[in-house]
Each structure stands twice: as C-alpha cells, then as structure tokens.
Length: 186
Image (cartoon, rainbow, N blue to C red):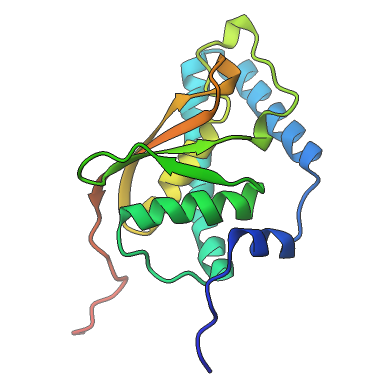
C-alpha cells in the first residue's frame, strides 16, 4: 500500500476535535494573568511563557508529524513554510506567511495576520514589555529542536503593541546531529 499523501493544514484542522475558541483564549489569558501576579516582573513572565511553549512544542511535534503525514523537509526554508502553512492552520486555525529571508536562508519572519490568542486582550500600561503570545515562540523553538534544528525565535512586531501584524523572527542557529537511543554495533 502506498504511503499516505501529506495533508494540508486546512484538511487536518477540519478533521480534529477542537476546543471552543473563546474558552481557549480566555484560559490562555487567565494563565498569563496568573503568571503576572505570581512573578511580578514582566521579563520573567516572558521567559516563563517561552519555557511553557518550549515544553508544549517538544510534544506537539509528534502530533503534527503523525496527523500531517509530511515527509522530512529538505531544508530550513521548507520547514518554515510547513510551520506557517500547515502547523499554524492545524493547531490555531490561522495561516501565516514566511517572509524576509536572509541571503543564506537561515533566518526568516513568520507573519500572522490574525492571532486567536489575543481576542479580548488589551495590555495595560504596566505590561508594555510583555510579549503576550511568547508561548508561540517557545512552541516553534521546541518543535524545531525535536527535528534537529536549534533555533532562536523572537517577536519583531506585535499588534498588541500597536504594530500592523504579528511577526516572529526564526533564526536557525545550527542543525543538530541525529542521536539514536542505542548503538547498532552492540
């Protein structure tokens, strides 16, 4: 039997069970609010959101690979397109675009026109340093690390800060060597 063809983000999104979008958005908001209360420093909240996202990403990649039927990406450019077109659609119901590639193809921007995490959100003046959706940068970083790509993911533009879009810069730091849990020669 031939292998299953890769599925589009739209096809996967329409076939999976979903949580109510408002419940998801409000629950995420409650988590961010609790972190702000517990940690008090906005920079610490940013770090915690990134770490939470990283932990999610290292697990989410398994579901992504199982449900999308994609084969191994040939390079970082193809990987970024897969994240933008399939990953974001599959898990958040939105599509993103990949832009601003550098000359050597190791750095790009992923631009989201819409972001379901920020529905009903306005940042108070005391939280202007907060990257409210920093969990997304951690998810991308964690997922890519599990497929042997060490990356740095940072926010460039954020509509909660008055910008016209949500833009994440994804920079490939290194390709990690594949490690196997056992040696073949033993």
